[in-house]
Image 1 (cartoon, one colour):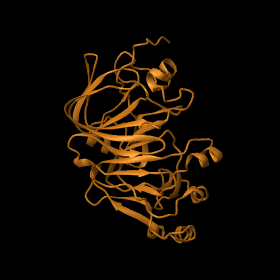
Image 2 (tube, rainbow, N blue to C red):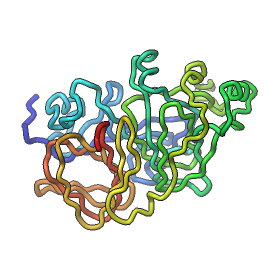
Image 3 (cartoon, helix red, strand yellow):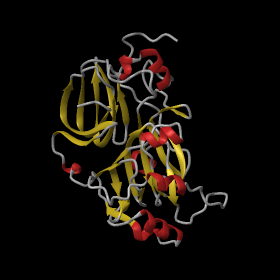
Image 4 (spheres, rainbow, N blue to C red):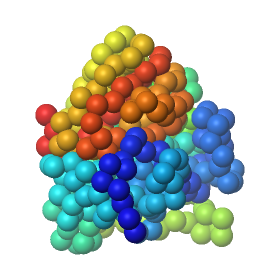
Length: 328
């Protein structure tokens, strides 16, 4: 395939919809997404995986896969600080929890590499919508030991160990590897994460799948990676009230996440070091690049290639902007 050197531009991809036992129709009702069923739990907005590959939705590169663009453009797309030889580092999703998710935990990189041949999984939730009183499970209560956790799990009293937090739109919750967690019913989040689909399910509320069977659990592996030090100290509210400019939401080993409030127009001068994954968390606007306007509505996602040069965001909106590891 031929890839013109100056052929890159702000990219939008077709979403990849995933049915989940806890999903529903919230992605259509909230964002107008054309979902294929009434049990859609996840929209994989930007994904570069052999089993879930994003395809460009607009412009001259429409129909090309993200994997093809990486092979064709390399650093022009990814940036000078992102090794082309490694797996694409990030995955962007929107989750619609119409029912509570399973209680689960993700392993870190070292454990995942040794036992799964995979990256670990650290993620950040940004709450886009939450019904009044909606809660998440976010770590364990203080003083819960491995023995106490195992006893509670075996006796059907695991809820006594779980730290619950009420959430509101605009809240940000980093979910590090090892943190026991679950979204509660009535919550929609944007999820920025490492490019991994590795989850250890601990407890699934005794529910059955469409075939009348319980979903598999992964208790032995989970017990090896759970952080028993208590509830996380990070996470909370305040982001929804950002008035103007940038606000750092998360800076970790694997990626950085910021909120950018746009009221009019803001010119961006990229360094060429890294790509950006973005999502509109409020309002509407767009991207202006080389005289072309790329319209963005609430719930839309996009990728800014590293090497495109100067561009502008415009409109009345708040953007979530994620860059890979190593970005200051």
